[in-house]
Image 1 (cartoon, one colour):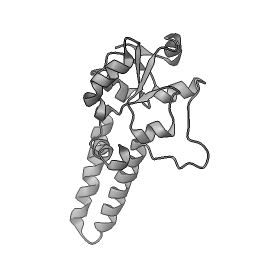
Image 2 (tube, one colour):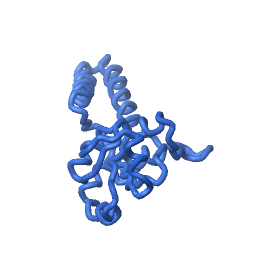
Image 3 (cartoon, helix red, strand yellow):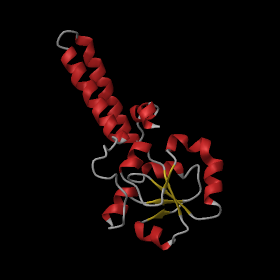
Length: 166
């Protein structure tokens, strides 16, 4: 695995396969033109199809910031776009976004923030009448700290299994 910046990806030319491993909602919201979406959780079952699609071309793994692409590199030989779609766009490269008037799906990260915040707020309010509800808020806080420290997220993995994230 090699870490490449946006200029390095452009240098690979038009034959490169840009394999975006973000969830479908994130991919629908913003993507690099010509990229192919295979979510990280679906990647193990799609390795044969990815290999056929690559057909000897160089592969660059893409996600929002680079973390999931590095995880995907354990399964798919290829380079990783350093900084992901964010770095690609901030370097002035083209991205595709939904057309005006189309509702943009929430990214998995946004879903995690909303769910975690809601759980903490509801459990804190419920603790006014039932003290053990504070344990839910504490568990969410510990989960978020572990997610930050390990760059993994159990809540994100659980939310990714929901039908609207497939």
